[in-house]
Each structure stands twice: as C-alpha cells, then as structure tokens.
Length: 102
Image (cartoon, rainbow, N blue to C red; front, side, top):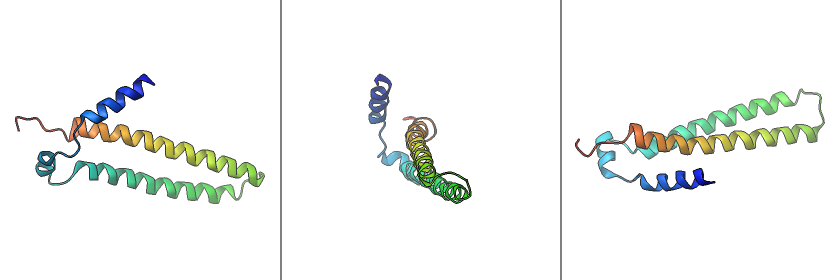
C-alpha cells in the first residue's frame, strides 16, 4: 500500500505535458506510450481469441471453460494495465527526459 502511494506521488511529479520535450522529439512521448499499450492490447485480444478457439476442443464443462477464460482474461489485462503504467513512468523518466542544459 505504501509503495502504491509512493508510485502515485512520483507519477504526479513527472510533467507529461511538457512542450519542450514534444518539440525536441517532434512527437508526444505520451502518444508513443499509448500506441505501445494499444499494440499490446491488440496482440492480447488476438491471443485471447486463439485461446477461446482452442478451448472449444478441450473436454471440459462449459462453465469450467468460461471460468478459466474469464480468469485468464482478467489476469492478462490487469498485468498489462499495471505494467503499462510502469513502462510509461520509465520512458518518461529515463528515455524521454531532457536535461535543462540541452
């Protein structure tokens, strides 16, 4: 819980709407991050569709398949959401950060 509060505080300290950074890179780093997350979501949805089609051939009850499917989807999406936030913080602090001297 304390780590979550510290992460939120650090996230608020980073200025994502910095015109200087946008003009230096000629694109908005936040849009880059959003595009990466959208690509991950796209591939995740394709993987889920494949898993669902494979589950049709598994000899198990429909309710058990549905529960497995829902649990898997929830875990995968939660993982992407959590790691997308970490990715965004990382790139904004370490890759797209510009020193004041430049």
